[in-house]
Image (cartoon, rainbow, N blue to C red; front, side, top):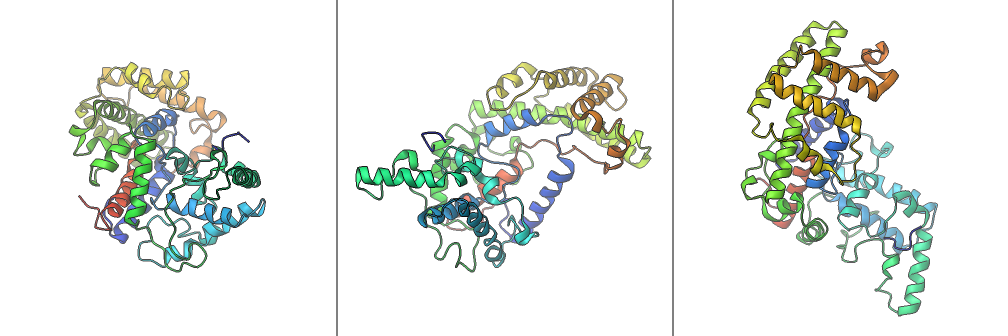
Amino acid sequence: MPSSLTWIDHDPAAREGAIRILSLFQERESRDELGLGAIRDAFADALFPGTSTIQTRLRYMLFVPWIYTNLEQRRAMPPAFAARARQMELNLVEPLLAGSDHAGVFGRVAGKGLKRLPSSVYWNGLGEWSIRRIHCSQDEYHRHIGEVYRRRDIARQRTEKDDSPDAAAQTWHPRLPDPPEGFPDKVKNLGFDLTPEEASFLLDCILKSQRESLLAYLALNCKPVDCEFPWQHPDTGRFSATHRELLHYAEMFSTLMHGAGFLYNLMLAELAERKSLEEEHRANIRDWKGRLLACHFINLPLEGLWELTAGRGHTITPRTKEFVAPWHRRVLTIRGDVADDAECRTLVRNREMRLKGGRSRFTNVRARDQWKGYAGVGQLAYRWPNVKTLLADLHAGLNGGDDAQP
């Protein structure tokens, strides 16, 4: 163990429907079929650090540390520490469903059979926003909590101050707001509405830990908006030059590679001899071509994309660049007429086969039979659908629960 533990619409029914649709896109259509995840995540981390596509509501950023601080106050020890934390997370489902706003409740369908707990979904974000002060994996935290207690005991003996823990034994932000009365075991009705104090705390954490990000700018300066992609935000003219450059390249890459996903599905439809799907994907490619030619930033030099995504914590392999670069060059040359272009088809086929090997849908009949007709065709939005909801929750809390619509 290291020495330093170190939617806008707030109508519940509308928001729940939006989240449900989003989850379907994530599961069925936004899979990374062509290995673009590292570039996608590099942009997303630069724009919206600490977020993810499976985060649902902002108040989970408080639910999780409240559970853990409760256990620490009781000095729960491993292995019971992890088991009790899990049970306390599962116990949140019922009081959350007792409220009127069910959108984004972890366990809304699975109940206590939930496998992916909120703590695992928010663990990285809690660290990125400096709410979590212990620098280790969640499993390490569970297993080594006894060492945290030991260090705190030593620090108290040295300083004789119970309220000044040694930094090496600090696990959570010292100014974490107090949880609701009775949380988590005796609270009967729990909601996602942030109190002004909670919202101010979260805003402060974002500003101090991610001051240069677009997330911080939006949280501090902009009302929630309902647009499909971040580059469509009505306030882009007020963004910094750095943020605008990131968004220009993010839009270029998203638009450029969207066509590769449609071509991939067209080629599979041809192999499967599914004529109606062939027609659908040819129509999708025609629509995409129109958006490609209308994109103001499609001619940006590709070198800038590699510069902006370098050093973001994601490995962009030479093979990925060897796919993106010729696709970029060829698409611009033929102005988006990719449906029957032999070079574009070869690029897509070779890329998928290298990524999947024996599981390639081009060569494995069983894998192709499991294809539903649409795979990997969700246009890259860099977590924006989820970020919109988090920002709307924050805005409502900062404004005393008022509707978060602009």
